[in-house]
Picture: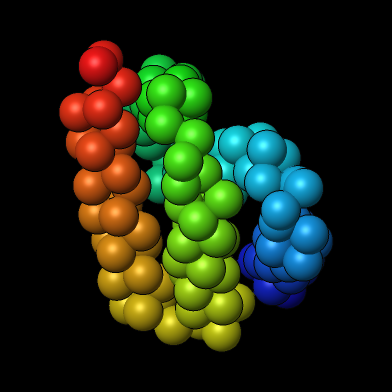
Amino acid sequence: AALTEAADAMIARHRDIEAAIARRYTEFAALDRDFHLWIIGFLNNRFAYDFFDIVSFLFHYHYQWDRNYEVERTRVAIAEHMTVLIALRSGAMDNARHAMAVHLATSRRSLKAGLKCGGA
């Protein structure tokens, strides 16, 4: 029940930003942080939790360099988060793991692309 309620709250927050993404996309960084910390909370891994602050800072800092696709990147991230959340909420852990792997791969590609154009 606690997982379902927490997932429902996360889903609602994602839908709120998604519904007004053109003016609220800048709010996504805080939501992204909350989402990932919530997921990391399931790991019971202090290293992952402590390391996340560094990863989050680097990832969101690189977004500042290339604002051309920021709304679209946010839209994609929200959709990927929602896939993870819906799978978790329904108890489909294998689907949730797969969706998270897809999301992390997308994030990795986005980070690499941002680093290529960020310094120029």
